[in-house]
Length: 151
Length: 203
Image (cartoon, rainbow over the protein chains, first blue to last red):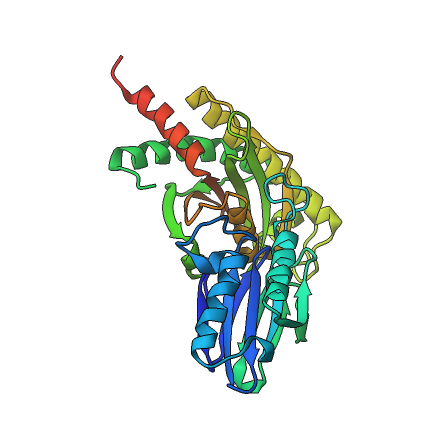
């Protein structure tokens, strides 16, 4: 299980539970057969470096660097994401953190020429995500309302 | 922020007074005795939040602390899904347990949370001489980890650890388990502790 701001890289199954405004982002390379998953909490590090997995910008930089060491090329990596919900409507401090997370993930992926193949983001619902690199990088999203979807 | 033994005691006493007032209002609303635990304090690193709470569904009525410090943290009325249904059944005169929650349940829970958290904040404000104005309440019935992590995201970019001050309120007659949880932002916590320490100084 991957906690807030944490990440894993490998070919074993990975999981994040209870994503609200947070984002579970996966990257998978079908030629090298290796994947990465990170549990992002906030859109922008604004120069912070102590917990790179916590922020969209530093998390994506870090994963790309680590995956490159294993032989992954940006053009063969495929990204998927889930989360980015707004659990509490109209809360000053919480306003749109989920949406801003999703926007910044898309932007950082684009800057690095990574294809975003699928996403299940937004709404008001909590999500748990399992990532199975061995099954061509499939992710399964389970929502709090009991529905599931595969991406 | 690491609390000393004296600071921990002071915060527990504050939580105790707030929760006692909240418990009284709950007791009046369900017409039955409500027991209260000793207030607990947990320091949780955000990466470990999943070790304390998971995918289980619960109702949470949440207030943001506003006032002198704009985003001062949150006070949360937390109740498991089963207990929430027992509570609204008691209030609304229903008996069916295996039913989906509807708008009536939600507005009843919102009102219960509103009354309890207001009582909690009134009592602590009176003790501290410091008003923590609550925002209007917001509610969700969802995965606990999803809701709490979303609130923590609202505490600010530098939050890597949170302190949860929680008191369990239970009603044996109706089998209702709930918690009142305070999750102050670091500056608010420092301010509250400063006020408590001043009160403890000999005059």
